[in-house]
Image 1: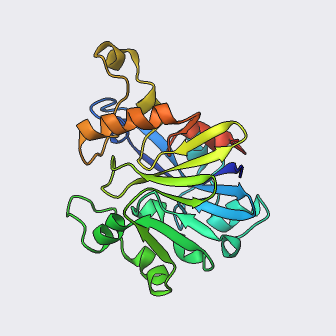
Image 2 (image 1 turned 90 degrees about the horizontal axis):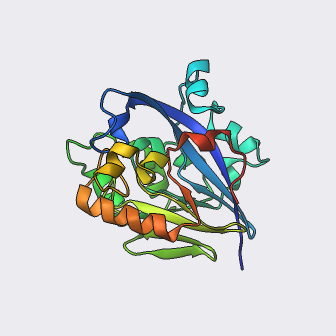
Length: 249
């Protein structure tokens, strides 16, 4: 059985209204989220789930807000683990909003996995979804690095990407076998509070809170329950507590 370690690398942050994360909750609350690239190592592979921002904004206030270090670049973050973008053999893009793929083209030797709907959308986005920027993937597409899928697939033994169209139509979550069980990095933007709602939401009978920006909130709710119940280790992709964690699993 192939087992992996997951290393959270913060390569960006966003500061905005909390309701961007928690649908119909948190209006008016200012909140800072980390933007991660997740370095996965094990079974002879060096894998990234998302690649983060190209030029992260950094400040003491932002680092204090997330409780961890913001790396100046993906290269600096990977150097912490004695590797580099050129050594990455697989990139899994959960989706293609710019803050999740801005460093894809640094991974020149990687196969880059993504749902085919994300490729379609990045070249023809709806006007409401301004976070798709084709420049960040045009180079790797020209190089023939992109592998598209329209179904759930085991990328390598012990790592499966599966369709979770919560935040985007082609969103893919990633399930990873670790020594501590199955870890799932959500393919949709959320924090732990989405899966552990505060008392007012619980009082309304909500078991989860959908992401603040969703394709369909009803479908999102059901998918999130499924993801929650599948995971031994749940990793909401923008949860701040992982900014201070070296290794998961």
